Amino acid sequence: MKNSTHAGLTGPRFLLAIVVAVCAWGFAVEPGWSAAGKAPLETAAVMAPLDIPRQISMEKFEQLLDEAKQTGVNTVSVDVWWGKVEKNGDQQFDWSYYDAVFQKIRDRQLKIVPILSFHQCGGGPGDDCDIPPPPWLYAHFATVGLTANDLKYESETGRLQDDAIPPWATAVPAVLDQFREFMQAFAAHYAAHVGDFVELNISLGPTGELRYPSYNKADGWNYPDRGFFQAYSTLAQTQFRNWALARFVGLSGVAQRWETPLAHPAEIRVPGGHLPPKTGKRAETFVNDRDYADKPYGRDFVDWYNESLVEHGRRVLVAADGAFGGTFKAIPLGMKIPGVHWQMKACAPHPRIAEITAGLVQTTLDLDARADAYGYQRILDMIADIKNQTGRDVILHFTAAEMDNDPACGDGNSMAEALVFWISQAAQDRNIHHKSENALACVAKPGDDRNWESIRNVFSNAPYQGFTLLRLVDHGCPGDPAGNPWGIDRANFTSFIKDYGAGGSATGLIVHLAEWQSCPEDQGCRYNLHGWNGLNGDFPLRYEGKFGDRHWWVGTVPNAPAQFSFTFNNTFNWESGAGQFDRSYQRATHGNEIFLIGRGDTKIRTQRP
Image (cartoon, rainbow, N blue to C red; front, side, top):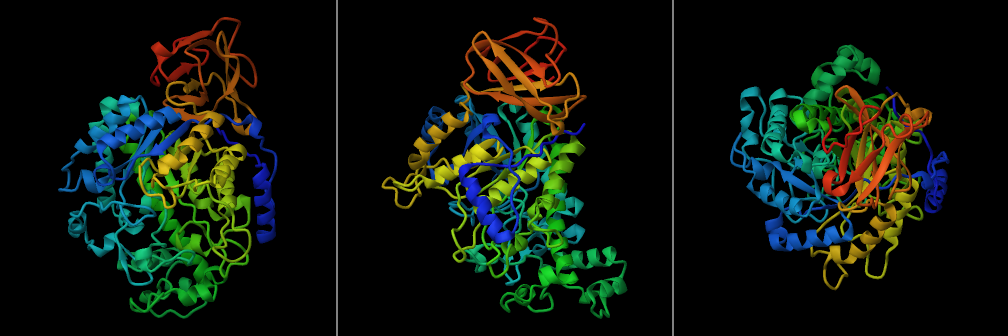
């Protein structure tokens, strides 16, 4: 069964983004999507502090949770640090910190999105923490031939970076097993609380995002520089060499493909790989001469670099699906890609180069074309493949909802606003469930709410289905007399939730329906909840996925009353004859999330059958 949507995007500010895009790239965005038909937000979330003992006290965290609940927030995302839980040795898990944090959230009847954080805490924008991956890892794999440096990135500058385990290492089964074991341990420890979780977000790289650590200040990067390629470790170069030999059928095939004489496989190198480290940017000539886009060697290298990252994401997500089985199987997985929005315009010295060094796009694609997902095709197709392969929903999170495009050439040549819409289009084309968040803390500035206007523009004109505010802390905003990002954004967030309908855990009702007949969403078909006796009108559902032997749809009834009557219809007809499948909802009995079997029975379930 194929369920996908294909529609364009419209809106007052996005029309400006279209004009900028047309001027910069020579293409336009298909109009036609109507904000009037947009379903309410599923989740209005906040990110918990990265490390509560270091950043704020547990008592202050509880106070902030109370404030978030009053604001209308219904979900809290929490980084579950691998380097905190399994710090002391293989299979030595300490969940006590998360037991306490989750209980504080649970006490307020808020839902939880745990982020299984396999990356280091520290080094990201605004980070105030220092939690590296488990230190024992770097000697643990000697028996399978891996050194400590094989578990780190080597930048073109020569710097070793331990932001996360690199893609070439997770291709080794013993390394991937450590990811799987950590997720299995989480599932076993929290099996009794499975109902607390609305998503299981999986960290796939630095700062939890599927990317390379190409833009680290510690590596000498400053905004808006192009970023540095990260494929210079011995393990990475070996895998590039093996990939090229296999792809082009031996050394002579590689030489013919790249139009260069090759006497030995060792001459197959990443850009500037023959240069010693500490010689500056080893890929500088490769970039300045546009080899990355204009030569077969350069396009092939970028293709491999992107493929390595994407296949790493695939491996870890498949492992997550297996680790979170049983009662966890009904919970969607989640992942995030970053908003690398600078050096995008046609007037930039090397358009899209920052995304290329981060591993996000391929130069073998048309970076201007929606058909190629503006270069993000392989990532988006991987997510759709995982969803179809596992029968489990995968939620894509994307950042930068608060950002504008740069008004002219110069500065960072940023097209952040356009990129937010492009990713939504690509996800929508593949029926990928997607949500958004701000990229940097302190959304509003004192006396200036324009960034919140950007967020509202996104959610008025693109089908993002949830928003997460970064971050629930009580300090850290320059220019705010209280130094409090939550204080400066709280009023805006309250208004946003009210207008866009997440409604908070007390009034937002999540409804799951097992369909009674095939209803292809890509052909315009839709299921709806129809309410009366306290709830008036129809509330659209979207296709959720196949769980067990049933296809499920899901939607949100914002500001649901404490009790009402309802049934369902789809584009073809009503659920059945008058009164046959009428149901009566009562919040006191059924809570804020319910599961129904269409044309099966009238039972209102609180767990997926």
